[in-house]
Image (cartoon, rainbow, N blue to C red; front, top):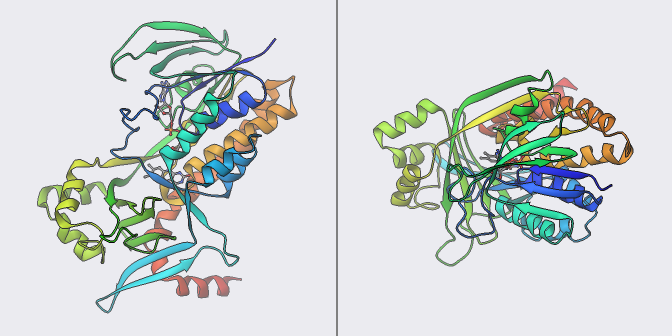
Length: 396
Ligand code: FAD
């Protein structure tokens, strides 16, 4: 009999996991708390505007391995290569831009809109006859032993409680993000080690419009960084000639700016070339006030599974801070690794899930640590690449 896979969360990781399961002929149901993000009235998760992010080989490889020939190309069509970083600093009082290439052989990171990627995945899911996409449904309970789960229908808003109903499943894949309900319920069935940390940095997003001539305001093929040690401003390009920028700053730094209101002055002092060239003064103040100042969480846990019936992936298993640009990429890689084991042990899913936890835990936890450590690289060390190169040569 066809096995039923229930995926909780239709973010990038859950959507890709559902595709992998559908391609293998499982009966797939995807439950998502929010409404369909392809609907223009849907508010994006946590963000005032959609965020863009860096897609790397780790993620691209997982898209290619789905088994759907056009998926990776459809995603890649919406990307912009970033050949390196562009560091914006002052030297002897002058504004200096310094490019630093990522790779001697010309390989690049790719900037892309997260919502765009998610939409492409959902479009492909919708085209599969064995997939049901069920939006506005919140997972509220799971019994992994009996393989039953309870969902609430959120009719009007994600806060408003609706009718609760029960479903059965053979395998539940939890891809419901950093505050995962699947993980919470999994903990009642397995002795899960769990660690979470909110770091002392918040982030706030800014929109950089195209130049008056319709072109990009700064060179597009870079991840732009204004490194200032305790704070950092970055900008990633979008296909519509805009940039999505992010200010990272300590909580107390944000509180001081809130109290003084001197946001423009702070930017002028710390981030040369931003005000007014990229964002006009009034717009900067407006966006600083209206866009949320959001926390950053790092989560480690293990094991990721229970028996043959439950497994968590993506941020649900290992939410990480964004400084290594690998949170989603690592989540997409989880999907490939999980289904490699499911393929290897077609009649023994319990072993497949055990192998998944064993292989994935050290890898994911290492990426979490690298991500935490990479703040220093981005906000400080990029200012002295020659010093670091000399140090590295001396150490060899
Ligand atoms: P999510 O995207 O969080 O999706 C989870 C889904 O589950 C949501 O749609 C949610 O509505 C749903 N859900 C939650 N609870 C329930 C429930 N009870 N029932 C049903 N559904 C539920 N990563 C990169 O790889 N590269 C980058 O450059 C990068 N930059 C980043 C920059 C910033 C500022 C931030 C904050 C993150 C960045 N990331 C980056 C990380 C990336 O955004 C996440 O790792 C990725 O979105 C995780 O995907 P996910 O599908 O696991 O979880």
